[in-house]
Image 1 (cartoon, rainbow over the protein chains, first blue to last red):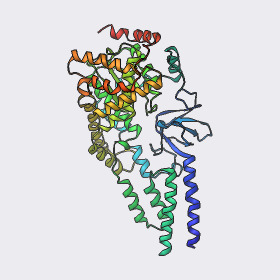
Image 2: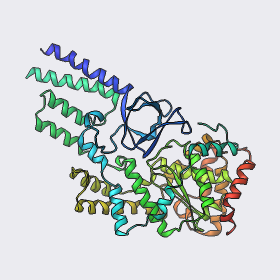
Image 3: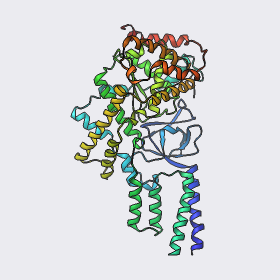
Image 4: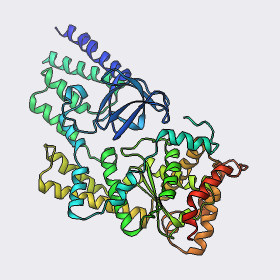
Length: 158
Length: 308
């Protein structure tokens, strides 16, 4: 009996480990993630991902992960947009899919979040008017490419 | 009994093999579950392993990007209580074009809410990097910059503080321990009113720690040197002449000499010591700022600088 258990466990554990190394699920840790066609912050956007979404990743290359979306779309995400840890509690996402425990997910999903900010706003403790105005000052990749081209900055693309 | 030991050893070896490939996160959990599933550990033993793994002390590194974002927003809101934002849409739009075009070249191009920049209506020579990517630059600091390249150097330095999460490191560990304890104790997604009140207090205190560091006590000298060194690398990757940071620091030194001990002077190492540290890493002969960049900087900032 025991002779058969050890090879069996190796047969299960090692392929799991190898599989995780080359195709691991990772969590998106930015609010509006853009999956790029190329490994560049200025590459064309082929899909968008939300905070807490789980994507399949391949082997990281110079800070960029090749990713596969649940619908099969492929592209690239920078490593700073991804986390191996769970980052948020997602409704409709089972622990089995993400491979993490309920405790970990609960811990990541709470804390200093919108619930706390809402309380501070309601109490009038902090004025977020200018913070919200700042948040609206987003610059698109096309604008950046044009800004760099006009400014004679080399490359233009990353 | 022997078979049980063999089984436990086999699980250990198997887990080690898996660890080699997938890192160590959640392994207490995995070990406990595997132990329970195979009958090596009883349910209560498995729970104990899980609790032990969860009891590892949490620190600023355990704050998620979302938590960092909300801390940063509150830090910026607090800074605005002392430093009034400069309502100059044209200048702020240019500042964001420049800043966000630099941020894509940083080692951390993505944060939860992205990088944003804003001018402050203050003559104090200063700039602040609130966690998560909100960067504030005073009118006084802007006047230390004669061209786009020098302003890029200021912004690059602040981006690098965010990249290294220097602001979050200012939060006292006791606040985080308390906050994580409150969070962990409550299993539901929405906190009860008492827990929320306690957590909000810890949040405010944490924000206070960061604001105090940004505006009064300053980062450590090592953190400032690291941000300078990283800024030079960032400028180079983005195609700006690294020497711009030296000319900016020189002008800042001159301005601070006349302005007294305000702003940067109290929260940063002296400009001359920063220049000395950076000089060996920067090519000496570099071209002056490009004419187009010079022109667009002057145009965008003219309404702001005209009032000086």
